[in-house]
Image 1 (spheres, rainbow, N blue to C red):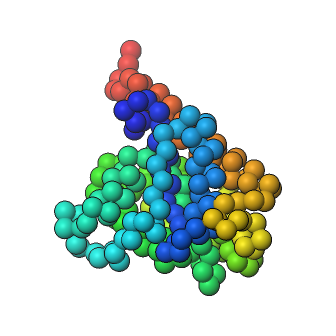
Image 2 (spheres, one colour):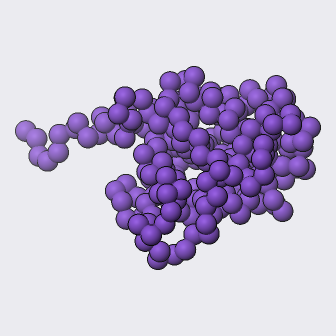
Image 3 (cartoon, helix red, strand yellow):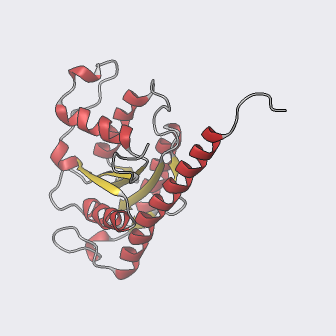
Length: 206
């Protein structure tokens, strides 16, 4: 579903509960590239949202405004960018908690992240960024999302970012730019294919 202005929408989710986190800085870099590629963009900073722990069976109507903002943004996105810090060999708890709220999309059509392109980013103080991305791949596949073939894992992020968390390393910056453009390109192609299929005649033809 494209936005009301006809642009496809990329929603980014990331950051930690620390101000100026490197995962948020990397996410901003990729999202800027998505916007330059022509997408409507939205940034959801998990430090600002301060989501409560996901509670199974708790109705969305009983959740706070921040939860409803997150769920509504995920629902309306054609593509997502998700960025996490790598903690102890996996994704951060705050990131996994945000993804758990996609359960509210499970009864919709299409459900969860079905048909949505998802770009993955992780930042690590050491060398374990790839493990965090691998964990997110499993989560996104479980939610029926389409993982973009390029993932960015920033190792030794403290050496590659400034005090505000922004990427200063040219190599990683270019990879984030490429990812931001890629999710827009792939989401556009998927949307075109879906529209083509919906226009095909159904039933017997002479």
